Length: 227
Length: 227
DNA sequence: CTTCCATGTTAACAGTAAGTTTACACAAAC
DNA sequence: GTTTGTGTAAACTTACTGTTAACATGGAAG
Image 1 (spheres, rainbow over the protein chains, first blue to last red):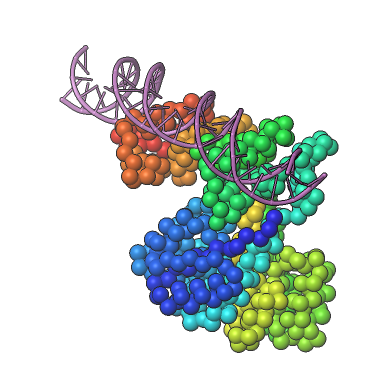
Image 2 (tube, rainbow over the protein chains, first blue to last red):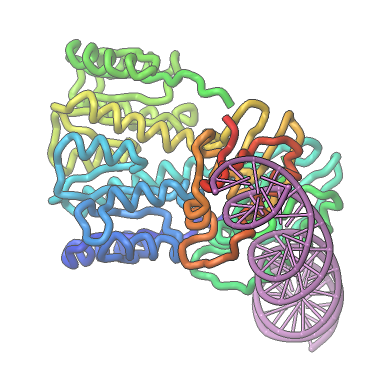
């Protein structure tokens, strides 16, 4: 499971900030996108599904706080990290920002280096949580991402790479529904664009090879691994 | 998935800090332990296996940086979170602190409230793997938007997308009456225009599938989920 | 009792999402 | 070069969902 390029969305109404921060993050190897107000931030977030969103608080249309609160209500952004980058340095704002779901709160003016360190720290922690490299065992099925093997009742099942990745993703949170979007960005990555039926075909192959119904379709929503 | 009490180890050579920070974290529901120098910090960490370690940098025996670096080499502390809490406010220290594996870097003096917000933010992120907190449970009915499942007395009920969304909306505020307008804009969105009987039909299907009367009609007003 | 209105009920329809199959490009293995 | 396997696309089928329309019901007001 190779590390995908991480996407960062920066929302700020000052073009200078967008440019400076954007430049430095790009140099650090991140894929950077920008938005210049609250509405655009939400719109972009939905379209891009970024891994991290850096929000100014004082923005036109919607404040960063509002954007954060809105995004946090949606399952799609449950795992998305959010950093407030703002000139508001008072304690109350900071506490509120962290309480409504931000992962960090950084005061302007800030050196790009410090910001990058904080961004890196967040990603380090996030990656290290990824339940990779751990064998998943559910009932009589075992899924071992190290050996790249699936076993049912002791019988090995050979899956292709994409099939395995897809199964592993679903099985990493049994019962939880993964939206098609989520599946695409997790298994295929954000850059790749594939047709509508691609996921279905892979799902079908997995079902076929496993021989048992362990993946359930939730129509109009996504797929889940039966718990 | 019961949340177990989180352990926090605080290492600082100033007893005042230990007391103030410790008091506040205890009040917040954490289990707090202390160490007064670097060696003690490492010793305690090994014994207690805390979830979070708050480290002063300038400590006798070993500096916080050294402690952090040592702990990070050990697999046991791979997932342990570390916060530096220090009077060293220069940029270079902060960057170095974050780079050697800290999850946050907070400058003294700091208000206990802000520190607690940051601690909570870290734990929120770390826990969020297991967050089934969004499940609505009312009497013997559970509604889980993550798993997209409704359960009554342990028996699964399969609802279609719109049905589920509608039920979830009503159940999000049991007892509260939702106007037909509200329902339309929340479930269908503002752009969409649907006929008068559409909501009724969906309500009917929900009632049918659930098999029990849990939605009450308030004539001329709207619908509510029975409390 | 009758009328009226809001909601309940039912079946049918159209549109949409997913399942299925086949084909093909490409890469790795032989 | 051939073979084999993988991932994606295209085309078609299937199944179900969401919506509507038409009609039924029931209660309140007059």
